[in-house]
Image (cartoon, rainbow, N blue to C red):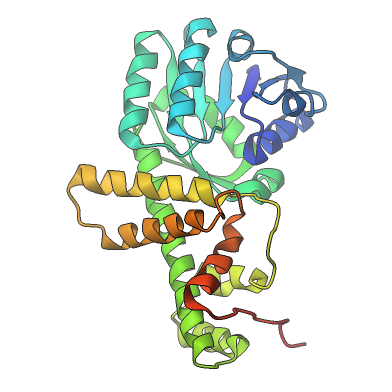
Length: 295
């Protein structure tokens, strides 16, 4: 069993570290917030990135932005043993991850990207889906760890492929959510009962994950943030970036980013993703309430 490190103990990283400890792994953890690194019972708290790097064969990172990932990776590489793996779960730009992989390869280390979907609940319940990019050897070393903390692991290609897959998935998720909210505002503005509207859409075949499941939480506001809208807007900019790099028109991606930017301008950047309904209501001047499902 390899010695494991976890850097970044937010909603995702903290839950993963706790699950690894529960499995009996030796886990060294670090976060810029001392209360987080001291809060993982059974793990060994480390005062620095270098301390984790020196202790672990595989270091998992779960960090908010590509810039933070690169900064941590360079500090990690200075202390990590030759052949160690940096397994990054963050959402970043494919080109940036490719450059980072080249940099770590030159210093005798390995980089595997494994961005995920499933959120904080998936991290807690081990139902995450990983989209992995990396060389075969390091990926296979990481696979047993990923399979214990998630429900599916897809090795989709070299570094860059995993982050591209994550952004493709995010574009569809964002589009379904925002399109559904826009449709519901049109229905509400016409005086239609939203429970009936949802039933019609589900029955008629135009549904999606939001209408099928997430819409049932539309009446709840101000949940503790599990996926902050500020991070969603960052991901939307990364999606536009891969479209620009490929020279592919992406008007829907642009509309998604614009809608998320609007939510940030309304002061919702630190709010949970579910509070997109608040921005939708403000734009349309209507209230979106579904009410309880029929008994």
